[in-house]
Image (cartoon, rainbow, N blue to C red; front, side):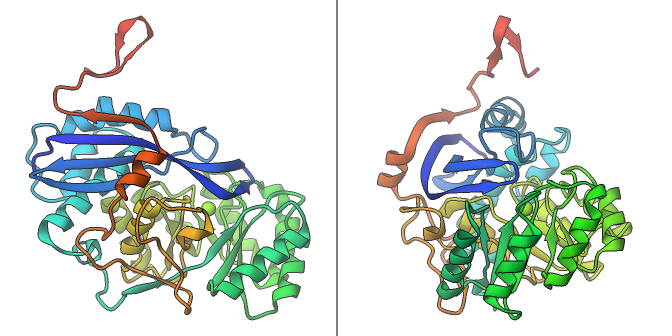
Length: 387
Ligand code: MG
């Protein structure tokens, strides 16, 4: 593969309902949709960055900047013989995981399409996993009634587990009422997005009475040590999300028993090469992983489903149906929930879906084509940002 052109489309899809977490509120899904073109074949992926550096430090602007100035220049003119080469070529660039993943995932899609295989096969997924059990993530609701209603709605639709976003003051009491409302059999978990500190231990201990599947990322976004201390004091398993950015983070977290579950987001960790490495490290330790979500459009959603066919994805993911978030998805057909609470992994070549051209045009506000001749972005005073 010799990439001859990369297309970036900035897409904005309105959300059906605002989504609130402990770090902020969103009303629309904005993303960079990236298409790699080579030998007449296209590969697709999207960025999981947000507009603001609240969930992590990357933003739409930094992703654009890193892709154009630092990452694509490492690929132009290079013959890529296997998708794993991309992660190696990106190694000299530190962090910028979301930007790296956006390109790397599109290259994986390209290779799978070029070979006429579903991406799951190229990744080494289990062939019998043709549908993936999924859960749903419920943002912080305005009232308790709203939370209970949301729980009812999603359980009725067939979702396999409820994940509830929490923050201080909107946590134990709400979860206790939800547990009482839905009964002891329903799988419930909570995601704090780093809203607590170790001194909140007495409050977090109260969660142990609620039989939660796990508590996701209660402490700082870059912490492992305090999570290990917390894990020693809680019966509820700790799951790490934000803290696991690299395979080394996963190794260290498991070495010190900072978590018993890992949420893998391929877009957060720099792409499939790294996601698989984290998956394998966890598998070796007998620690299950599941696939997180960033309210992806159908393109990212398809990628998540293919990733989830790997053997150690043993818990329902956050990859819900298109209509969980959007009135209209970018892809056609959209992803719908099967009656058994699963989403079907598309079985065509690559990720098995493409952006529907009319919808893509409708939701795109900025479009750029990059080639080996594209100049770098200059910051004020003409300072070059790539050498
Ligand atoms: Mg999370």
